[in-house]
Amino acid sequence: MRFSLGLFILGFGSFCQAQLSQEPFWTWVPDKSAPPVFQARRERLRSLMPAGGIGVFFTNPEQARNNDVDFAFRPDSNFLYLTGFEEPDSAVIVAKDGITVDGKLVHEVLFCNNRDAGAETWTGYRFGPDRAQSAMGYELAVANDRFKAVLDGITPFSPRLQVLSPDTLPGRNRYALSNMITAFQAWAATNKDKLELTSRTGKTLGAMRFVKDSEEIRLMKKACEISALSHVEVMKSCKPTSTEFELSALMEYGFKKHGCEYIGYPNIVGSGGNSCVLHYEKNERTAKNGDLVLMDCAGEYHGYSSDVTRTFPVNGKYTTEQRAIYDLVYEAQEAGIQACKSGSSFNTPHQVAAKILGDGLIKLGIIKTAGELGRYFMHGTSHSIGLDVHDLMTSDSTLRPGVMLTVEPGIYIKEGSPCDKKWWNIGVRIEDDILVTEKGPVNMSVAAPRTSKDVEKLMASKKK
Image (cartoon, rainbow, N blue to C red; front, side, top):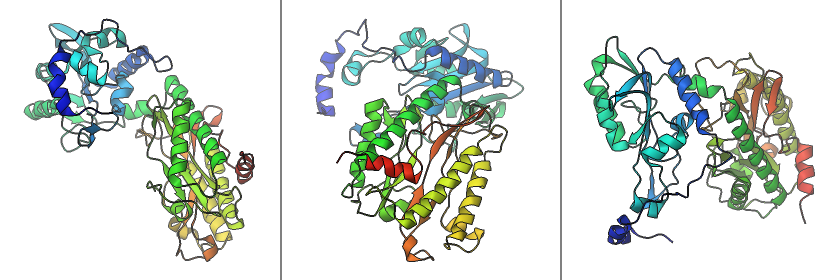
């Protein structure tokens, strides 16, 4: 049960008398990346900065869902990538040549909440600056109420000081204006003639996050494996009377059961005509015998999201028309995956897949020219994936070892489309997460069957 804010206020005085735990119940999760991983990323970021440059990064605030109920907190991806710190109301300054704080030259400062007995009684353990500095390996950590004073102590110089601050510049705010962001914007306005404010994601964080390091690949592999396994379990459980929300719940149960903390994005579970809606999220229809079910669902593991889609017949057997479209999409996807080679353009998998889909739809009599393909295939084939399901990219998007991207061609034929009615309400997308390596592409979500034959075989094996 939840306690009301009124009860909190009435009881707060007694809680404030509590002692802070000397042996907190927080422990490092063994499978998470260790502090040296994040230290190395901050050092690399500094190496990419111009002389005298600084980076200022904020995590997102907690967001109210309704009344006094908040959404589950999830750190901003840039902040998480650089710090590994998962508490709200936090920020970090990374300085190329250092800044002076309390008379000491430091190259990084974490700002976070102080420890507080009352708050910890209600919402759990906090690091506090001292423990964050020692346990997480920051050069310096201080209370977040010192942010303005530390920032005001940075004196811009000539030539202009370059300040990297993605998504927190005036007019670019994705998050509520916290006290720290407000202080940053006031400082930037006061010193605007001496600053070069930039997001520069393509040359800094974009370049770093586009190519995954070994720790990221390890965590992504786990996210993909869990997501694929969950798709398998749902396919084996599906029956003609299944509701979309039941299948969605089964999918999310599989994520949590196998170790994912969250879903990577809202589950897309479209049956029948809903399979033709790209981002259908209501998930409220009851599937009918003869329907296809398109499930675009994936788990988030320690901050890293996978992105997996499978399309299967609710009764376990594709119709002739469903199989024709499915096999065409599979052929396009397989060719797109094979095109994920080091040195190729990021757009190559899309070009390859689109050519196959266009030719195939012409052969099936659904379209007359390749120029009509956009009516039934209206999205790109690939996007980068990582801490965000649509992850940061660099201005140079050439594929190279360590890049992870989706390959997800699809065909969506809505009711009323200008083709034979036998094709109506067939929506098919097959999506996998691909790691580019020196030896070629590696399908990280391959454990979920992809061919129509293998899907039918899996569904036939489900318990009666």
